[in-house]
Length: 255
Image (tube, rainbow, N blue to C red; front, side, top):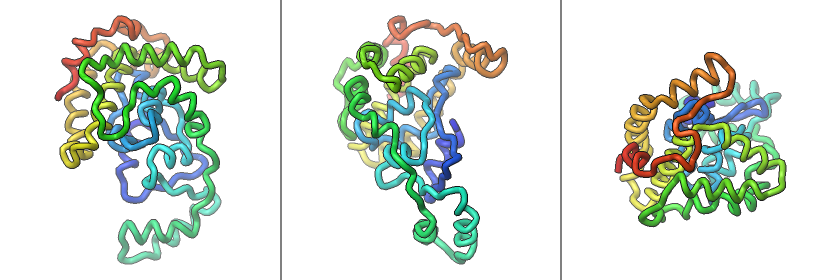
């Protein structure tokens, strides 16, 4: 979860079992999904990438395959993990391509992706947050206001999936959510610039953003509520998306 997942997604070879517990829940503590997660899901279908980042919901191997077309992890059932490990150990020397080929004999069906199953509702509600890769948002794009619009639509969708989505977003730090929207829009638009928006460039930008967000009161308050007192009752400042100062948010985001 969190840093571990973000780091793993940049590996040349990734393996998940049915017991994997994957999520990027940093908005719950006043930060945002970092470690290059924005780069890893920049080419996800529609708004699925920023949706996964905003909600921090649990992701299965099928979800990650959906979020990362052609680059998702290999799903190896736990019962076959020892055999897969032995096959990898037998490779010497080896390349990432060799490892992927060897794992092919043990790959199973990860099942259906919940994100893909609810793609129509996700796009209906959150499609305004993610243009096609390589397309920048128009001048004047206001992340907090746009996410407010998305939430209003989500509240009108009478499904358990979208009710759970609204509940998750209502619990999280408003300023961090707005920063997530802005950062992921930047990373996705950067696909038009090639190397200028490499994983390295995104990580460098995130280093700047991390220093600024970690210095805000929301970070210490989020850690208190979730990890120290564990009352799960953070007092965010600002307390709602409607109170987020878009100008102040822009100051946190390096160009």
